[in-house]
Amino acid sequence: MERYLVTFLAALALSAILTPLIRKLALALQVVDEPGERKVHVEPVPLWGGLAIFLAFLSTAKLFASDFEALGAVVVAGTFITGVGLVDDVRPLSAKVKFGGQIIAALILVAMGTKIEFLTNPFGGMIYLGWWSVPITVLWVVSITNMLNLIDGLDGLAAGVAVIAAGALFVVAADKGQVVMAMLSAILAGSALGFLPYNFHPAKIFMGDTGSLFLGFILAALSVEGALKGAATIGLTIPILVLGVPVFDTLFAIIRRHREGRPIYKADRGHIHHRLLDLGLSQKSAVLVVYLCSLALGITGVILAQKEVMSSFLAVVSLGVVMYLLSEALAGESREHTWKERRFNGR
Image 1 (cartoon, rainbow, N blue to C red):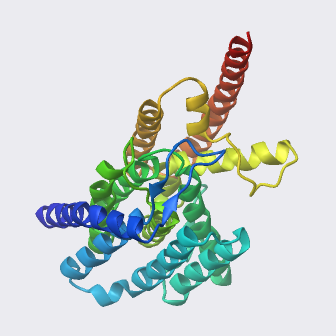
Image 2: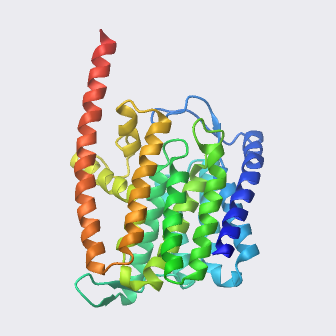
Image 3: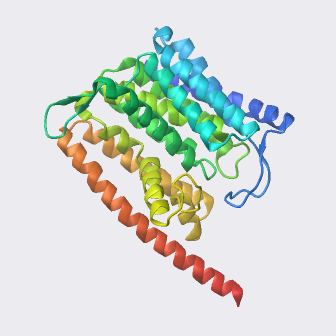
């Protein structure tokens, strides 16, 4: 456990040192995020904070991983997706190009041996995927990558959720004896946490797509290698719980947009953090609410990792239903609050 703590602290310190340096670089190169209709900040904020997270993660893994070469799939694919984010932060890529980059990164991961080879059947036995392992792994990795990217809408939100998710994955991996995956989870948590003080409201720097794509991608890769591949008894359900906030938020966004007859990829202000703001919460309060939700789901995932698969499966289904009902109730409250506010301001 001491080794995990050392790697966590090393990643945290390195990220904290690198972040202000990257901020100066972004300002010098004018890589900034301008205010916009869907954005809550009112002044330009430097981007590329994710580069500090990436460099801290890579450097710490290189220093402390006894078999760094064995991490080739995560390193190569993670570097590629970070490159996509760097470019997108400078000159925004089209949705198709960015999506294509995510697919290529996922295929690199698969080609180098990281893939979902089987699933645990909640009704008993195993489901071996055969050639289906490739499209299912790509779908999983791309989905999780986008989910964290979509939730990156408030200061400190994505970084904090990533810290909690990585922490929960660490506990599960360490308990199952998956040393490499536990270490990488600890390093990722430290890298994101070292960046968080600069990113919490009021943010001095944003992680940009450089950070949100990298964090989402690595969390997806770790869940494949750790919770899915190495500990088949807990199946897909634990990673879904650990990453519950971005997973359910994205799922409900797809349902909402389809119901309203809009393209599912078209951005809106219906995400959970937008609705909390519409209710009158401050940025800090909204972020802390999401942190608490993420922490509760992460703890649930860790507990259910010790239970039988059917329990985990039923928990995910039940939580999904409950969170959907809460989301709909929250949407109604936020619409009513906004209507009353507009009516009051109109007088």
